[in-house]
Picture 1 (cartoon, rainbow, N blue to C red):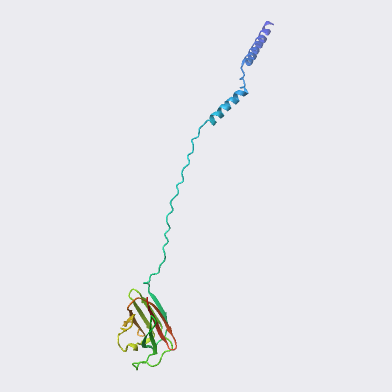
Picture 2: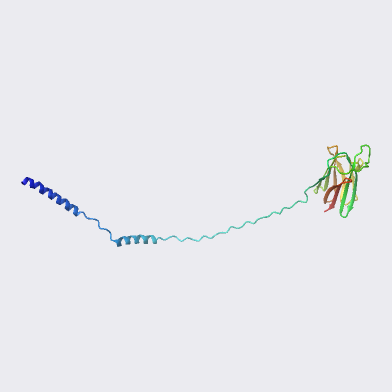
Length: 214
């Protein structure tokens, strides 16, 4: 009987000790609500009291506008002028050269004839002129003329040039070498700068060179 009671007593004692130990463990006390608020308010204060540096207003520096240079387009008076006309043909002759004047304009007329191999002076007028190109160069004060479709230049009677001494603007007309045997090249030299216009007329055919002093 004593042997049975002793183990039971020991078991009860151990159980009681365990319950004491369990009850003696302190439970953490919850923080009061006001303390939490205080902590948050402190944090808020510390955030609000952070000083931000003052932002300085920068002065806007205006860039100076560069002046726009507008270049005027000017046409040089020394530019060459080219005149052309007539038809592609053959068998013509510059039979006569006439010089006239109307006001300030001098008119040089080159008359077209039908070429006659056996005649020194042609007699039959051509209806149209052959193809021509006249180039006026103010720098040299000269007009370079080229006529195609012409077999003769009877107006000079075999000479190489003709002078116009009495005229105030036309100095002379002189022949120049030309490779084509059905055409001629010549230069009209002027005494001063001029306004030049070249055109042709039909029935009879003739080339007109109008020259007006500038």
